[in-house]
Structures are given as structure tokens and as C-alpha cells.
Image (tube, rainbow, N blue to C red; front, side):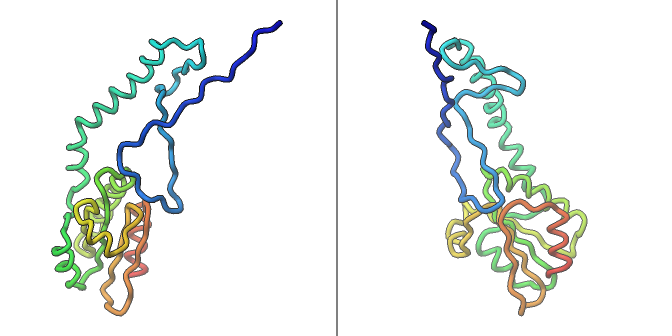
Length: 188
């Protein structure tokens, strides 16, 4: 008879090491797999795949991950830029002054979209200058404040206008610089 065919081995999701934020509408999730290959490299599967070939494929992304970890301090330092990071007490002081619109960025250092948003906020600050104040709050360091304000999705932006009668606006997720500027100009 004919030899029986077996289905290729399935790739199993790897354990997730960073904390997983609560996902909100609009976020995309990408699974990490135990056996991954750089783009354009065929991944051997099934019984024909040798253990040595699987090890080579797994080792390539591992070296990239180790290089990223080694330079992570530099990435975090760049993310802060000209936007000031504040504590709970400092935030209370900043909010007392309602002379200019205020944007509060609730972020975490391990959050990819938060790092991207930091770049967009730097653009906004560079273009609008002193007509807007932008501050950042690290949710991992200020857990009590995050709980009090019910910050569940990251990044979260809170827009506080000059009018004390108007409530603050709140968004979750990545926003481009143009959208942030539009909210500041039209809503605050």
C-alpha cells in the first residue's frame, strides 16, 4: 500500500514574558511562535526537519532579541525626549494651571505602542511649542494613580482644556500626531 501521510507539526505559541495589557478595540494581536524564521527562510516542519536546522532558525531571532535588550536603555532614554515625566504629586501641581491645554500620556516602558506614541507627541510638542503642555505618567511606577483613574488600556491620553467647565477627554490606543493636534485645536 501507500505510506500514510502525517500532517505537518503545528507551531506552539511561546510563553509571553512581558506583562500583557488589556486589549481594547482597534489593537492587533500577533502571536509569537516557538519556531520562527527570518523573512524569506523556509521553515522545515514535520519529521523531515532535522533538530540542527530548527536550532539554526530559532537562534537567529534570539540573537536579534538579545541585541535589542542590550540597547533597550537607549530606546527608553530617547522616548522621554523633551516631554517631562511626572509623579502623582507633580501631576496635581501641573493640573492646577489651566492657562494652556494639557495632554497627559499614561504609558509603560514595555508597551510598544506607547513608545511609538512618544515620538508622535514629540512632533506635536515641536510644532505647537508653548501653546500646549504635554506630560507623561509611567503606570508601572504610579500604580495607585492608574487604578484611581481606571487606566486599563495603554497608551491612554487625557486631554485637559483651559475651560474648567468642560470635562477632560480621554482616548486609548495609538494616535498619529495630526489627530492629537486636531483634538487640541478643535476640542480644547
